[in-house]
Amino acid sequence: MTSEPSARGEYAGAVIDHFQRPRNVGHLAAARDVIQGSAGSQAQGAWFVFSARIAAGRLAVVRFQAYGCPHCLAAASWLSERLVGAGVAALAAWRWREAAEALQVPAAKHGRLLLLEDAARALAAAWKTAPDKPG
Amino acid sequence: MNAPLPIYLDYAATTPVDPRVAETMIECLRTTHGNPSSINHDYGRRARALVEKARTQVASAIGARPECIIWTSGATESNNLALFGVARFHAQRGRHIVSSRTEHKAVLDPLQQLEQEGFEITWLKPGADGIIQPEQVRDALRSDTQLVSLMHVNNEIGVIQDIAAVGALCRERGIAFHVDAAQSAGKLELDVESMQVDLMSLTAHKTYGPKGAGALYVRRKPPLGLRPLILGGGQESGLRSGTLATHQIVGMGEAFEIARRECAQDVQRIAPLRDRLWQGIGGLAGVELNGHPQRRVAGVLNVSFHGVEGESLQFALRDLAVSAGSACSSASETASYVLRALGRSDQLAQSSLRFSLGRFTTADEVERAIETVTREVARLRALAPRA
Image (tube, rainbow over all chains, first blue to last red; front, side, top):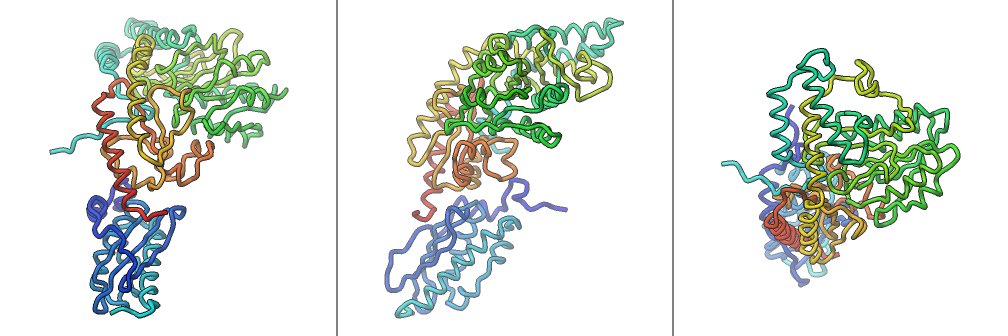
């Protein structure tokens, strides 16, 4: 039986790539067309904050900040790329298993990916409840 | 092409074998194959002579007489033999033992086993600096206390306990005193007589010797009753049966001989390197030193990093071979019980690293370590949301 990469103190190549060169790091300043969603905390061991600019009914720009293990940081970076171009329905429907499979995240870390999903849902909720629903 | 090896800053986990020790061991393996117990022929007598020379070398390093040294496989076995051996032998005299919460697992686990056998353990809590005050030991002693066990130097934070003061307290009350000196041999001057120690656990592999060799000092005058754990051939005065590993023992003897001779110059060279490392890392915001700032061995620096997750910190610093808490327990991903005993939160304990320097650490390695830590901590903090 092959053990998961991190069970041997190793990480999948995609995790190392995103950990070393995280994409879309940062935070967009509050604006009419900017939404934000977050979940987790330092005390929970994982904390994700996403901000995004909406244009023409799509996420045009996505930024993230994250605190957590290498899998968490890589998953947030990976998701920030995936979300560009997504509509509100796709954002709300996103599930953590997609990141778990793509990054070979071990079962012990799946709880932290649930927090990532919560952050995506919070972003979708912010979009749905934005006063003038941009785009 | 293979990637270069990380900078080794994990001397408290294990030290490289000193080339002089390796040479001595190789020579022994090449020329001496006799069983040290077969003293009826030259092969055995030759091996026996090497074993006894090593016994004298180890004894000299701790101010003991050679006949007080019992060979074991390492400090874990020495601790087990000392604790089980004394506690069970003297069970009729009393079933109370005093120790501390920050001992190595090789002491904690045997003591917890003794608790299950009906012994009562008083677990002393150190101060926030990791120090157990002798008064805490004195206040814990009872009429039925038969054993006190304290480590000399803590393996995670490097703080030094006042062994001589505790030794005096125990000796005047006739209580056996065991000291785990795995982390202090070769780093501090050891003298079992002036420290009034009855049992001392030693290991070779943290003193530039081989893994798999250790010793237990057992006071002989007056004799200290000890029940063996391993029965068989009756070697080591019946206290530790099993064919002696001649080349390992020879290596330990040579390592302790070098340590006795060069301890002062090692400390003189390593302490400024550690101070430079702390100066470089301590300049970052949100960094805390764990353990007493002065009462510590030269080579150990345990640091907590606020605002950085522990696993990411370790992975980001994979160019440095350092330990997260204790090397023996970090695989379990639990926060260090030593740092928690000092009052650190679970989260901060997990974001702590032990840098340990040694005989072969260079100033250039320390500078590169400072650069790496400074860069990676800043990078991870820049990724994190603002608290």
